[in-house]
Image: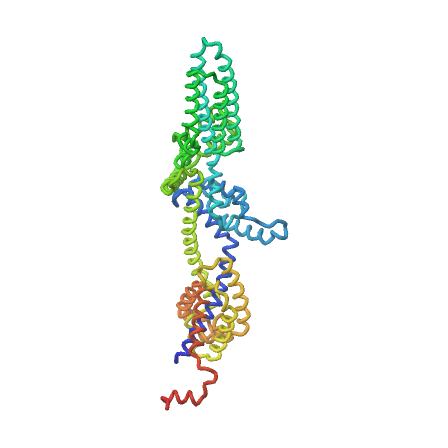
Length: 537
């Protein structure tokens, strides 16, 4: 057997396995779609991410938290579905098959047998969740923004009251010192009235922050501006006495000490919770958690608006499993070690969740591919038996039948020529949608090629006669012992089919290119060939 024959034989095998791999890919994709393997794997991966490990992911509270995330509008918007009976009819069929498949599985912890993996009354889920959407959804599901807002409101309220108390103390001492001076009484009364106006300003600023009409920086800046107006009135109205000048200096010192640098005022007052404090909002028995509970219990506190939401959040946190809290605490520590500024803790934690979620989903994707490869092997073995794709019989047929080799070679070259600019099939970096589209085109072309090629596979009389020298027409008993000789060929073919259509398409291109590179030019004359074979000259 010379080298060109070996190349054609190998090319014939590659072409045959490409055809069978395309069929296997279509079947596997159909099964994955109907049973929603990708969406189901993603949901389990989310549960593992929340719990921190596989063992804790089966906790009923972890599953419920994941279900709550999947119920969030941001995640529901990803899983868009068509509406209308006729449009959703095919989808309803797949839902029915999927429900039947899941009905044979045991109920999940905390749920019943009728509840799907996606939660109560949910028949489908997204196959992909962007990290920014997941991080936002997780933060909002845990109500971290509400907890941080409540904590900040409570601290801003204490900060505001502390500054007002300092000013009131100056006025009270000044009033006591001038109680026998009737000429100063008018000024003292004026400044108490101005203090009341400043107090009202402070309350309005606090209310605006509480109702999200102003951010923290703006609110603290306005507190300082209100105090400036008080100082200006004090300076304009005060009598020219050392006692009043001393009081003015004290008020100015309060303003300069606290409000000269807004960021420093926020930092020193602990008004913007850092990452550790954000994490502690969901950590029971922590000082921050108790601070929030006290703020909620304070019925006269300005932070009491929206108390129902905060109480619900506290109830949710009380039910959080320890593994979830520990996992988020670890994420917080990682984020804290990376920042160099006093950036708002909740945003930094969100970025860390996004980064870690991306890493976790990359690992989950690797696990899914390994699982899919196992399914591909089982599917390949099944297809090899159903199609009677005996590798050793195919080699025997291709080595003996030059016409078959030529036909396969021509069709393989034609398919490759049509797809020579389609790099998505064999490129591992291609998007899955691009690969699926390219494989669909290749499948259609392969279907057309099968009309011109009688591949050495199948259970036809002709193929069985060539394979085991038996056909039903011979009226002989079926040679079951000869099946044993076919099993190794089926196993070899099953593994080959599981390699996937992209692998065989890439290999087909390499074989065709090598074969074409070894051809003699068309102008190469017969005399030149004979001359070369005789040693030249």
